[in-house]
Length: 187
Ligand code: IMP
Ligand code: MG
Image (cartoon, rainbow, N blue to C red; front, side, top):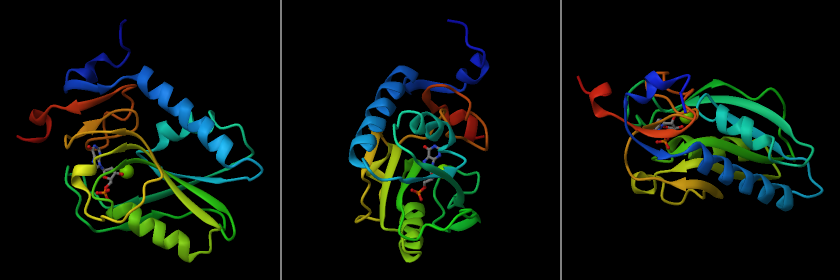
């Protein structure tokens, strides 16, 4: 198969999760959410920008009336290690009081970002808050008691890009998830 974005694949050491594996998992998660939230209208919160690709596939795998919200929060510069400094860059457009909120994240690494975000949304009076993530790096968790309700793939401690995840804002448009060659970020 000829890749439209084949050039980007040259910067990967390997493909970790293929688009087919992702599609199967997203479908499974969509069905799970559909069953669990039967009779309710959850608010799905997409954490910009990394979760956008996952989010757009996931919402279409859920057979429920739902609403979408977008939030930008950052604990990262353009480096590959979490700084622990959390900033809200773009807030939700609508009130979440008494709503069933599902936070959709690309990857849980230290857990600092999500822990902060979850606390903030709890404080605003959500009826329930669950966290779903595409990827989880359990080896790097610093917030030990953060509950991730659903993780599609647990991955080793390697820096990955693709399917929404970036390095220095690039590689988000790769359809698969791959390990970025260290040569790209170590000069
Ligand atoms: P945490 O606060 O350390 O859990 O940071 C999570 C955020 O760090 C994610 O939303 C990503 O934006 C970023 N991140 C962590 N690991 C990776 C990676 O391997 N590739 C790309 N971004 C990553
Ligand atoms: Mg992110």
